[in-house]
Image 1: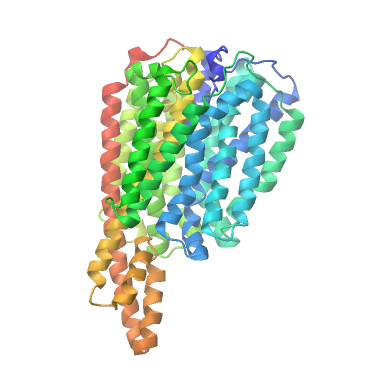
Image 2: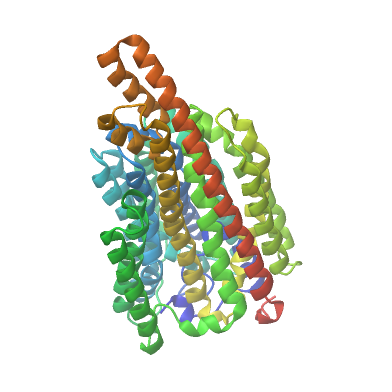
Length: 553
């Protein structure tokens, strides 16, 4: 159970301020954290600094990695499924551990769990930067996610313990601004580090910052806990974690082996069975990690679907848009990051406006137009062809970015705003979990569709044009979006057997076929994402109701 299950809530005005923190969902136990002791003077501002620095890094690592993926693929000769795991190992750990980390923090101390999270995140970041193969990198990313979950689950609870009154609103506002900046600058900072130094530095840069945050946490942050906290639901944690991992594994492997492959079917079946077991356990346990009675309120359900939807559509598609801009259009990592500023800047500006409107406009009428804009933006990005310029994406980036900004601020209110204060911790934790599940499953499912379509189109275009012995390798490279790599491989192979002219012809052929295949597949997943966002808009319109909100304003 979370801190919020027993503690009193923050004042209403502070809760509104905290909604700005919702870009990636609110941590477990945030609004319900009753202060054990309110820290005074300078100490509370040190708490704000430590929390904001830690959360800045963990959210930065959600977006900063995308622009480094092509460089990681080249460094480790990694395929698309490997790159999917680089992202999903982090998202899976976050999703699986958020609720449990909140329970542990209530029981053993929020500062302690936050500090342990910093240590794990630092160790994971260092291991990522020193990785010598993609498997080690994915394992290190999972450790980052474990540390990130511990930090994210305790962040707002630490602030609620340190601040009261008007200062608490200021602290929550600073926290919300930190999350917005982290998401906005991630692609650019990732591009600068990858192009200027190496992809390894997108991880290594965390190490000194984490150490600073750790020193401040241990020296200046007040400890707090909930003496009436229940024991963590370990059975629920294990069944949910394994079910989610099996689901993502099955979705990713379907991109390589096909949906009918034995291990894909077994993985998806195991996931389905364990999810049923998890739901049953949550219904019968005295202290479950997910109180199923929360689902009785349509607005809460609508909020979960919205949280999943925003992550599974636009945020998941960013991975494949980055692959297109870098691997097909040939821009550097920093050039790619700058071009994505059209999206992140629009989202940031829109979020500021939505944050101001959220106390006056019902959540439905921010969420619904937000998802409509995301859907329209994704549809505008479609229509790419082999000769398209990156400027084709600008209108879609701006429109989708405006939609993201409208969705994020009110999304938290669909969780914490429809439950009593003592249940707000679990409610916000579940909402945050659904966001990370959306990232993990969205990247896996869309990646499988993308990969299968590229492979099919490339195979059709190259069959009879290149030797069968080379076809499999070229198709695999193209299905990862590595058009340049595939073209250069074909050129080298052909030149060895037929001279320079044959090499040039092979390069042109594979480049043309590969570009057309990647563009067509990208158009296809953009269509799916647009439909998904439109479906989320309809769900919000039907399920989110103002009468479900508890009077807390």
